Length: 473
Image (cartoon, rainbow, N blue to C red; front, side, top):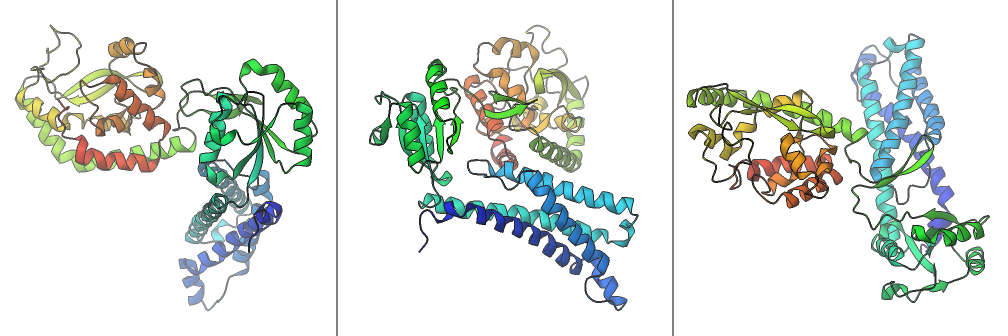
């Protein structure tokens, strides 16, 4: 039967196994790709069987690059508590570098023409998928084991206030990380939940050091407010030389932060208090998504858009498209396109106003366009110009942005991403003249929790719930 501490005591063995798995994946995928590519059929027709020597040598070279580069990119570090996407990103970069070196070597030696491009494509893609699959599978197994009580790390939390209580509660609910609280350092336990009060309480730094040295403690988490600077300094000093990992939890729980994280810039550790999840690799994924889907949708909708253009032209004199200044990504203004739904001088007397159910300025055909949201179709051109995204917070006019940026909490954070044709708020009915606070909450949820699957979900919801809605007018 597997003992509770078995995995913990054999972490180095698991690490070596993972290194071996990576090398085998690269070798096996390269070999199998040859037999599944047109290159194999060509060589078979010439009477040659088996893997040619130059293919075999190329695969061995890639295995060597993998053995050298993966440790350099810190692929085999402890990923406990780190996002799966971060690990996948690291693997992608490391494998991409191995491919780049292999390709560069083929170019320098002028041997690229000797290899099948289909073989290389199948090999590179299948190896990446297999490398990622091995990591995801291991995470699934480890999460299950940790949730079952295996492979735990024992920690001591320095702090007994409200901040420490929040940290402890999150650790307790995240059982898959396998972090178990052994003791607390502090004096006052009034703010601690009942389940924590039976933990061992340490109130002296000397005793804390002795407990860590003698006990089965892996990590010490310092969770004290900034005002406890002396205590923090004393604890760090007392633990100098201890084998336990020491982690400091910044006092940021009192603030309303969006997608906060830690990073390092120019060697300086920083806390990202407000930034978008759509950055780095995610930004490229979303950009590709926008251009491909916008081009496809524009091609499919072009006959309908031609019909609508004729309808707009016949409904009232004036241009077919209505151009309006809006505020988008990073607060920059751009010209947004719509099918014109009102007479040309509709705002001459009223000035810029929010559309409402009582608004009678739209033409008969324009009213139909608004109710079906078809007047927004020309914004596909804005997407192709890079000014908008298919999915994102709806852009507002500059005068409304100036009005609400100081009235509505976190209003300007919606500009951390590109504005969209549709969004999380719109598919939930928060469009038109509805509660702006709730709409911003939905926009910020989207920015913080963005994923490709969330975009797909919003697109599907837009088709069934977002095009025709009681708040579309």
